[in-house]
Image 1 (cartoon, rainbow, N blue to C red):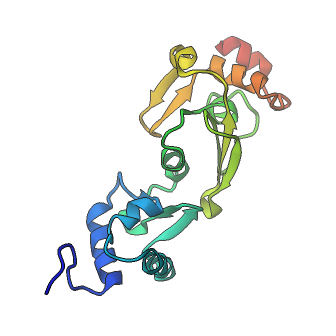
Image 2 (cartoon, one colour; image 1 turned 135 degrees about the vertical axis):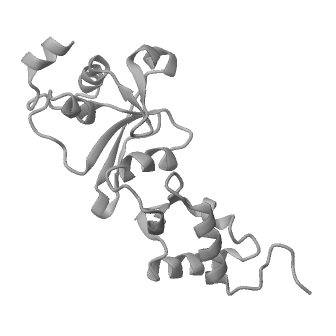
Length: 190
């Protein structure tokens, strides 16, 4: 008797086949809940074992706690951190700001390497994403309706982005160091 939803393949092979069909250039990062949907018939223990084996076999790479990268989807390594933001905090308001925006605008003398700074309605934390870098989430108390005039959607990174004025406001509100700021350039661009 064949069960509905069970293909008869070995579980790791079934997992790899279904993940290969699901993944693509726009879908390469997965939470355990995303992946769990591929094998609903398996127990939680069997699923966790399968997930560990998929990482060990190189089918998945652990980006950070609770997030996996399907490498065969040919990820754009320059965008991995940006893509991870919405997967890590899907229900929060998140936008690029602080040093990330000010560095892109040439207003900070040093470019942050492998680190992005994101204002978030969620709690503050730094997420280590191994060789890809880190994401610093900084809590904002501002409401979305207070921010709409100062945010634009950055299509290239798939995130909202603060204006220079908003990034400077966020720097002051979060009491970040201003030591690396080029204040002359900042006053000219505002």
